[in-house]
Length: 267
Image (cartoon, rainbow, N blue to C red):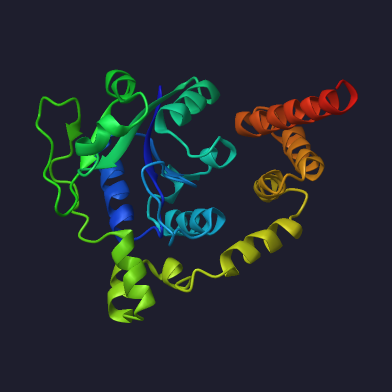
């Protein structure tokens, strides 16, 4: 059975610490793939410095593509189309239904065990999913019998995304260059460059490039332009009829449109 470790986070921004842990996980043979689940809104955080979700997703994709394990990493935007704030247990339910032949585990920092009881249906998570814990500065590893699997020997995340943002704000180039990969440091202003470039790439997509059509469809979907989204998603399904993620998007759009039709014509 295909195994995936889900690395949830805001990735605001993704940095070398994140990538080092993910690469170490793959080197240890703990899973087939690592998916970076970019959270649009953490229910336990109210951070005004949170940059746009599309920009964060674009940076994760850049970082994953630059990794020596790029073929075994994926930036996952599943939570972008779920109710907000997003809850891990709900996301896992969606992914488990969407990928029935995949076994999912979680990867969290050592700060999480101390707050896990604040999570929605946290007992269900502990009982049904393996949760790996990597070290973070200032947070001791949980006890061995607490239901978590401590990753002995995993790289130590010596800085946080908050420190990266501070370094960027203060123009401390020697610091942020150490924290960020080259591909991400080019986006240090967190402007619209990455998002604009992605949209431009989608607009110029060739008929053979289904990845770009899928991405453009998601952009349309999040803008509530369901007709345009449906056109792109149907084009993808013509070439990739077993693409379950895109099928789920089409299903959601059809349900939305059906609801609107009934609401308008059947008051």
